[in-house]
Amino acid sequence: MRFNVRVYAIILNDEGEVLLSHERRFGTSFSKFPGGGVEWGEGLKDALKRELMEELGLEAEIGELRYVNDFFQQSAFREADQIISFYFSVDSIDIQAIDLRNFEQKNELEGETFKWEVIRPELMDILTFPIDQKMASILIDKG
Image (cartoon, rainbow, N blue to C red; front, side, top):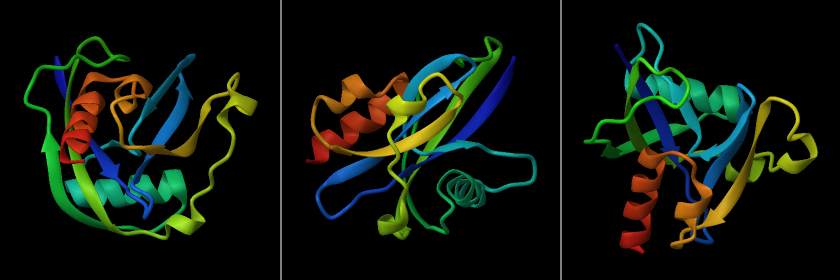
């Protein structure tokens, strides 16, 4: 068993929407918040800055910690991993520069695209993983 530490961004726009990542990896499609794994030698905020640069090609200023999962979550991809996820607000990012390509056009390929989603109860149905769903429920409750 090992711990798999993950960092994710809560990026909001002026219309009250949150940015989601729609991905296909390991032959599986899923939707989640933008972000990913912490690498050896990185702090949490530095890891999230790197992930956002890799995924979006944009520099970001990371804000406050919003949530850390407080329940056991086994990895969907590595059975022996326990996931610990940290969610941060993003204080500054050029949201106009985010590429919102159509994922359906390339759903047979591995990769990711991004889409703005309204913060509403149906957001829970869009997100694939339980920890992301918990973060979404927090966003929905804060309305």
